[in-house]
Length: 305
Image 1 (cartoon, helix red, strand yellow):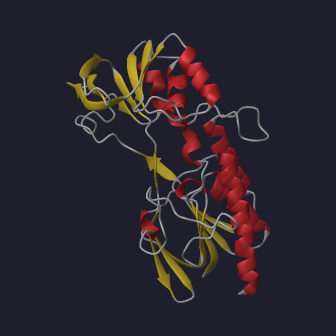
Image 2 (tube, one colour):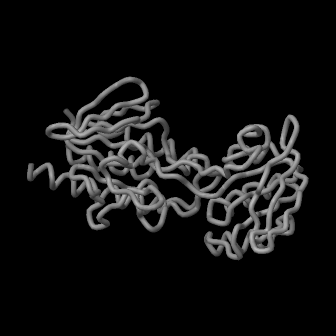
Image 3 (cartoon, rainbow, N blue to C red):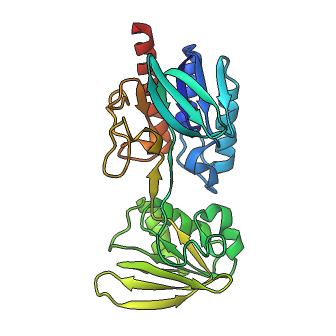
């Protein structure tokens, strides 16, 4: 039986692993990828200590840092599918058919992309419908595209596409942008970007690939069509909390509710950090800090136990 199983290897999971190793906690980290959501970012400028780093390079640096620690086991290319309570702790089942036992769990499982849920989205997924601008922006060189969303993800997507697309429509459901002011200024001032306020996509159209969308003004009810080559969906994230929903308190967004002094959940023995938790600000630096806080609290629990 492990003392601790860490689920996820973004900044939070890796920070937790480093501190758990230094505290000599018998730990297993399980992940299907490294770096979390930021792994696909073209450029990160707010990771403290580095002026600029690509998401790929940050993910590699996190992995290398954790693998350099002694005493921590790593099971990558695997995914946790179920957690169950048992006497003295928990059992953790994975996609690869393995089951592990642990006294404590730290959730750093992050989140996944939301989908529009409109006609044509599923049919044209990979044929013009995109969920990762960093990955696929170069494929739309000199093309006309739309980005759906109004938060940081959407703004960063627009900034990625500026280097490639000839015209970018940003469809925002409300009358305000929710992302960083610096990113807002860049998006609003670029001549190739046209912001459509109070609009939502109703249907994605095409033949073999995307050729356009039908969209609606949510205030007036007016519907229009727009010819374009690509649809980038950046409308938010869904926490990866499904496997603990039966015994850990979730909020209305399916985020794990935590005590922000310790990161402990409503279930004794389980802590949560990062995008899967109800932390107010979804930031890499905050995830890492909260993970350190959680492991220090877990260490105190181990000593008491």
